[in-house]
Length: 63
Image (tube, rainbow, N blue to C red; front, side, top):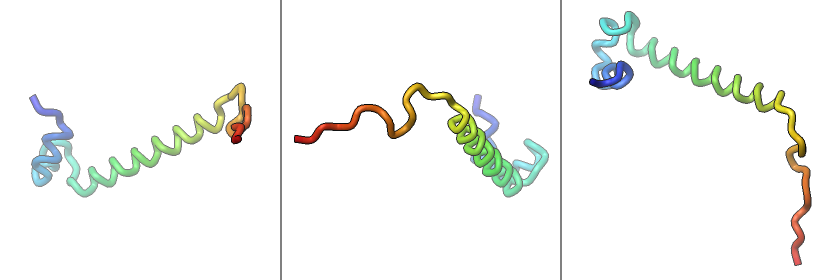
């Protein structure tokens, strides 16, 4: 059985029947969801408490 996303990508002309919105609108929605996910991950990283701050730690010794 194929996934719904795979079916939509194979048959974009049938997306209106499958999910109720046009393929172009669906792809816009997916892009917005990906953007929101990246923003959310950045916010989580910003709030993360670290023992050693980024850029901290022992410096490399070059001889």
